[in-house]
Image 1 (cartoon, one colour):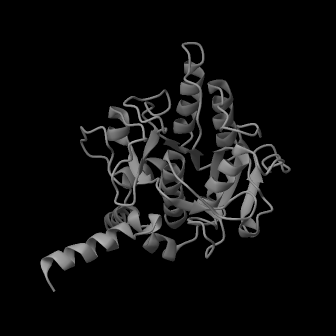
Image 2: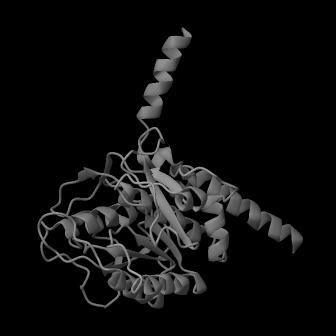
Image 3: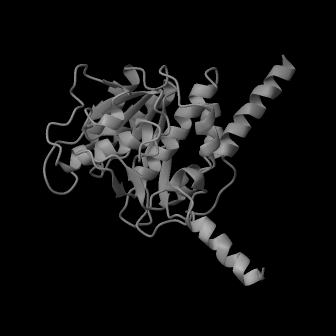
Length: 306
C-alpha cells in the first residue's frame, strides 16, 4: 500500500473519531458511569426531565421539587439545558455522549424560558447560583452559560462566589464563549476556574471559540463541533460550541471523582489540566486517559510511601 493511500486512510480515521474518542474518554467511561455521591451542578437552562433518555438519571434541584424542569419545550433555554444534561447523564446507549449517568445532576436554571436567542444572565444571578450549588453539595460546577460582562459594581460579587467555590473544594468548569474574540472574562480569568475552548473533530481550535492568555495557561480544549445530544422535544439534535466542550471536561472530572473518592479537588484539577508552563492562547486538548493515568500513579506512589 502506498504512503499516499495510508495517509488518506489515516486522515479519514482521524476525522471520523467521535467526540468521546477525540478526548480519549472511552476507557474511563468503560470503567465507570459515575457514582451517585458525586454531585454535578449545571447552571444553565431548565431540563426536559421527562425525556425518555433521562428516565433513569439522578436529577435534583437546588430549590427542591421540579423547579429545574422545562415548562416550554420549544424555548432556547430548555433546548440548551437539555442538550448539556444529555452530554452528562443521558442513558448509556442513547444518541448522547452520556459521560457520567451514575452521578447526581443538580439543576440550577439561570435562564428564563423565552423563544428566540439564548437569554443572558446577570453576574449577580450567576454569583447567587454558584453559592447555592456549592451549599447544596456540588463537587463540580458546569457553567455553559452566557453572561453579561460584569461591571465594577458586580464583578466583586462574582469573584467572591468563585473564591467561595475554591475554598469549599468545588471545581468550576466554564465555557470560554463563542464570540471568536481574543480576550478573557471575569470568569475565565479566575485562577480556580477551568476555562474550556471548543475544538473541531481534528482537535483544532474553532474560529468562533474565545481564546486568551488565561484560557491558554489554565484551560482545556474539548469537542465543540457536531456534538449530538438530547433534544428537548424527544429527537436528538446536533450542536456545538464552548458550551458542549465544557460539559466534556465536567463529565471527565465527575468520573475521576467517582473513581478516586479520596482525592481532593486540587489533585483532580491538576490531573485534568496537567498544568505545565504554557505560553500560547490556545489550550491543550482534554486527555481523559492521561488524567486517569496520572491519578492512578499518584495513588500508587502514596500507597508505597505509607
